[in-house]
Amino acid sequence: MSYIRQALETDLDAIMRLEREAFAQGWSRGAWAEELAHHWVQVAHTPDVTGVISMGEVAGTAELRRIIVSTPSRGKGVARALTNEGLDWVTSRGATEVFLEVSGNNAAAQCLYISVGFLPIDVRKDYYGPSDDAIVMMLTLNRRIDD
Image 1: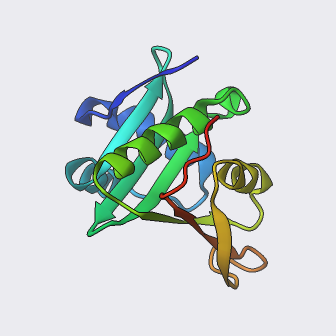
Image 2: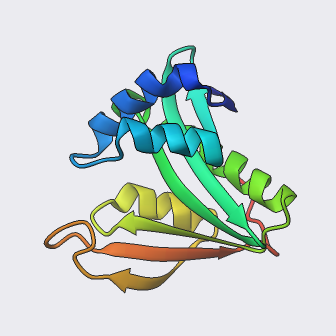
Image 3: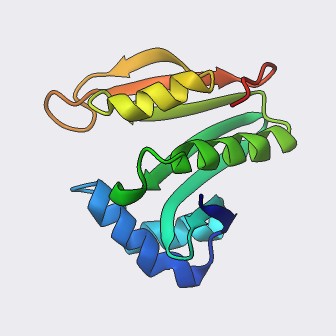
């Protein structure tokens, strides 16, 4: 299993490898540098970086901004561990709800989010491109579903 720790600027190359592996038109290096500077970013490592999560929280509302797990590490609980770590963090900050957007074509991610209590609340048609809708999901934190 991976270990989770705060992402450092020295992790940026590894984060960019994950980004390129996961998204054809992903975030830039500059965008990730800003993310590291202004948001809660954690990495899973074994010791190589195998996953990353970024979350933000303002006035009781949180957003799961990005989660990526390397292809060889998928299906091994890394995304769940990162998600639970993020939910613990936003709960500790007093957040009462968490939002995220996920590709309608990413069934595995949708299943993970539903399994920890997120519910779909909206669809953004063709958000990621033709025939790739964004599913907007929300989790109310006054109830937490354990592993």
